[in-house]
Length: 251
Ligand code: SAH
Image (cartoon, rainbow, N blue to C red):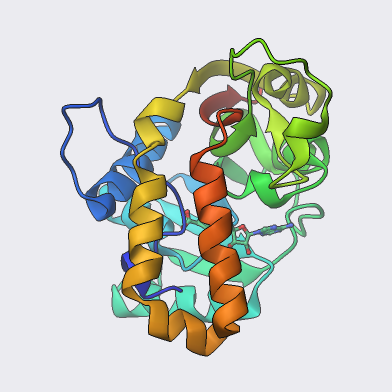
């Protein structure tokens, strides 16, 4: 799926309903927002938690004179991301390693900042991951997060707990995210609900999947493809699914 969307594996961010950006530009705008909130100084060393194909890390290194270490559990992603860094002429500043975010092999305070661009949603124990990040980032260092969350859809329906587990078992709830961050020893500086500003992504994803139907069927089989499309449509119609941007700091 890497060649689709220029390797970006995250939602787009649109300013408002008058923003007519296409999906690729909105995906880049999301990464730009991550960069702006992290605001690294020249020479800083940044940890990219859940690096995907390396596209966001490369965008960061092009925008700012920093060093980036990206991690993923996928060996294939890491190989592809390192190849992209070489092709971009950035291999001296941008590198990727196969590492589990739950258990970072880095010494304490060895990074100036960190980010997690749509990777926390895959991690069952967010306090564990955030504590690891808090350990390897120096005091005063910042972390920016973009994540999918469950939120109160405001429809007055009874909260049985069940509606919050139908798509992703490991999503956190928006109203408890600040607490998770504090329990990990970080201080939340800003928590912004951007469900509306990211919503056009659902239609863009579905269109992207449909335009490459043959390729996806080849990889996933007809059933797998139908499941993916079905899930995508389900997500687009779940009012309890939201998207949040968070900036936190290690005290
Ligand atoms: N940030 C990238 C990729 C998002 S996809 C982008 O925006 O394009 C989610 C990423 O999180 C994948 O790279 C996946 O391998 C990674 N990931 C999921 N669980 C992880 C874990 N426990 N440790 C490290 N990476 C993880």
